Image 1 (cartoon, rainbow, N blue to C red):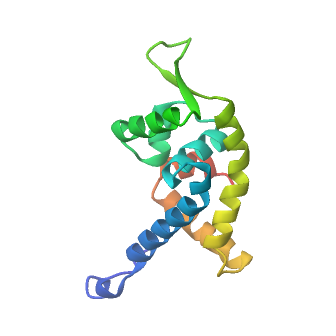
Image 2 (image 1 turned 90 degrees about the horizontal axis):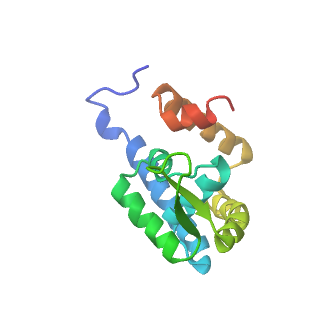
Length: 157
């Protein structure tokens, strides 16, 4: 379904609004994570590991749309902070597995509470029904575009 014409495109703010909302979300997460010594980007890595059982750098790259160099630097920082370690897979020595250590597991156990607080701040101006509608609209857009993560993780929910 087409919603825009070239003439009307100058009045289209969808891309700007989606981008600004994503920046605001990361700023709010950064604020909530700062006391715990992690950034919004590091929060995303850890919450994906926790919620989806992702334990390889390659799978994290797919979830976060990051290149392997960026992911390596991110994992270096999380490893330096003492939250995880990299281990060679016993089944395939070419593959690296990410394993949370005690501090990492303790942090991951607190992430849902911290994430909920951040998302409540982000969505505080809208009703629960509006939030549900927004999530459904975004999911519909991503599924229609064939977004592999949305299809894989949220396609049946």
